[in-house]
Length: 130
Image 1 (cartoon, rainbow, N blue to C red):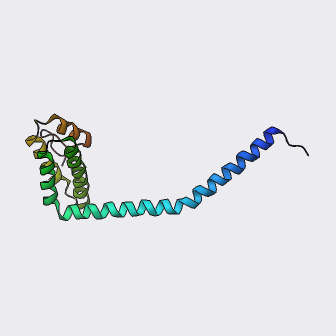
Image 2 (cartoon, rainbow, N blue to C red):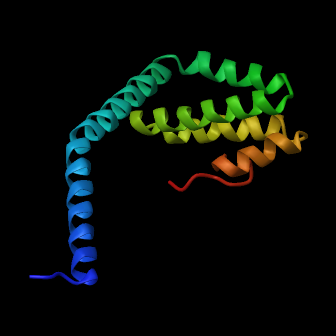
Image 3 (cartoon, rainbow, N blue to C red):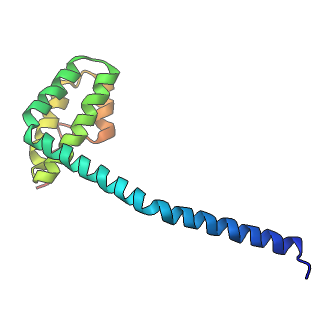
């Protein structure tokens, strides 16, 4: 029996699709383990930050004092992690108050304030909902 070009193309597509699906299924457990390991590492990092919050706040201040874009980016990354650590411990209000004070103290640094806006650091005039 002769096969038409359409039949041959359909068969090739089905074979390619099956092959790709098998490859995806084979990678899935590795990807799941990688994601779980990354989540566990982040949880460990946040726990460490929670235990060493004062030191981390000091590091944020030191980075801000450098007045460079790279230091501001690092400070904001730490602030984002500090917020997550405070959320984990159930003490987000303490984070928001400290962050507001940072904003008040460094309001004359537009590049830093822009970064604070990007990561959602509250303005001094905004009070947390209770």
